[in-house]
Length: 480
Image (tube, rainbow, N blue to C red; front, side, top):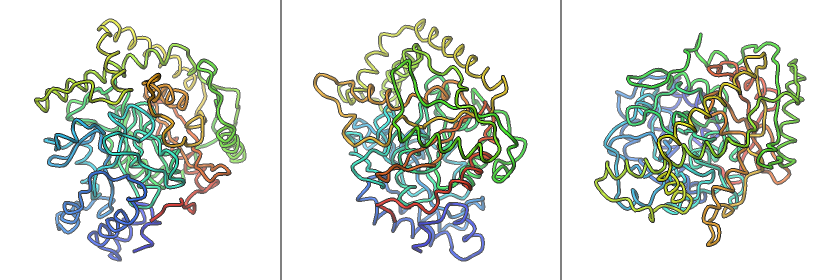
């Protein structure tokens, strides 16, 4: 059973299919790993072990591609009826709020045969890039517990990195799959807009910038899970072009000779990437060139625009205030803004003063930005390579507010992530791969971005890099 902690989800599913391990044994082993490991990390805030045991023992457990494989759900966006759902907030925690609906995505995970063991820690409303909510405390990085796991899917990424489960749900509105994947040394793919349904409770969160997916240990797991959760559902406002064949078949497929550009700095906001992150990109570009691709580090799409952050924050601020009001409607209780953490209070207060015209102006500007960026790929480029984040994983506490700077978390976040939010706005698929580590033993992720709808190409290239720059044998300091 100890060996299960080292396997990816595909290998675990193969053991179940072969009859070497049954789903109940698989789930019990994962529960034991969480009980033993999570006290050091604080990734799992709502254990659902009894329900998981029942599901694993049920003869009606769906015979999907991951039958009996344990997973965790992020405590944000995806709901399961009857289970705790708190979104990192003290407000919902203190109400002991339980979901009344089940999301389409939760059903798709179940239909794939995955067994949910609980909910993972998130920053309040998922609005900053470290998982240190006042409601549940900080999640600690398995590679060094003094460092952040990123956010907002920090609990999920930490649990996968530490070997508690081989796969966990994640979602991404400005980098929230890719950032924790980078900081925890796992694989994190943000799918194309509309690839994965957020219904029935969510339609166009953050004006369509958010999308759900997972964090895993291998490219093949990421591809196979994407196959299981993709597809149009009733009422979805967007849908991505269907793949020509299952994404799992792209693993090991020849991508051909690609044209690849890169970016490692954001002059408009004064961010130069840390040398460790630049070294990670340089090593990746060298490997891609050795694999036969045409690499031009000077080729970069126009993602570095001084007005981008201001327009993006209009959407986030207004959406934060709307989220507060929606919880008042659902719970029938007042949600005073004083209950929010300082950065979310600032976002909500700002959102209150934006007008409908402000929103539409921001939306139109970001639409024009999307077309400018998409033109780079349309002109013949295939892949953009960047650092996932501009620094190694920060230390815990660096995002904490002060009396003279209550918005410290927002400012710190903006400087850390110059390369991820643009592709939430454009809707393009982007993946963070654990291709590097620094001298302190901290993971350094590298982001690859493809044209809209081209997850197939990303998976082919990611699989090439996984073989050429393998990470499977790396183990964090805290590991199951």
